[in-house]
Image (cartoon, rainbow, N blue to C red; front, side, top):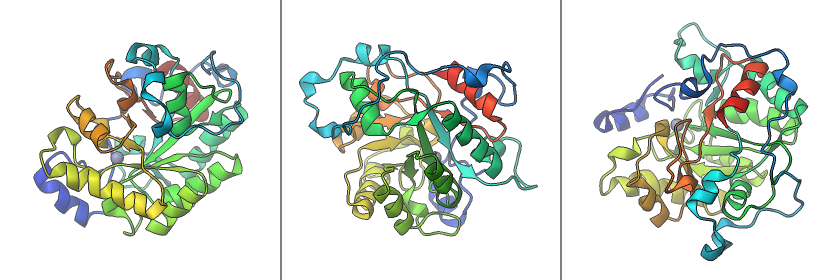
Length: 305
Ligand SMILES: [Zn+2]
């Protein structure tokens, strides 16, 4: 796993490596215990969805930019709504001898991934997308029963070749947060594949140019890391890009107005606490670990949201 902690070296690293991992630590561990811990045997069938607002809706989610500011709930109301579970995946491939113990939190073996997704389908989960979540959080709009969001970071090719057909089998849709420096490189998705995911009803989000830590941006960094890559994604998909995922899950309050200024309506972090002032820009996700059985994943979903 390569971690881009130092801006001076990050661009060079990004240009020279094909194996880029996303996060600084297995963020789920602090909230749900050891990734390898087994939950109670009967947990896989337990209901976990938020109890309110779970009836299936037949109307598509409104464009988040069309929701009048006056009808958007305040931060306290948004924070008080039951959280929708959101999973974060990186690489979906079988482990190799050189993979470190830590890296395996971010590398989900193929069959394990299929088993995890099958568990979600068998348990009655319905995938939701960011516009649906935004409408739910801001206006209380209804969601399908047992909502869950699946997100994929860092542009890895196996998200297209392995995850996509698996999700398709169950009618699941997902969010792909793209790091544009990688587009078209070996082991990463091409622009055409990103376009296809978008055309098929998945959502494309922005994940910077080359995975620099947002907390260190100054001046032109906002153009290089946020404005240009987002424009690239809009050109590829033909759609406005409304959502952002912080590299490594790292964020600060200063970054939020910068994202708002550039047209984003929401941003995703990892398992740390949300910002009580701006919960829409600190939406929580947990990393679905490569160590987790379907039952462990289910237990983590229940405990983390
Ligand atoms: Zn990432």
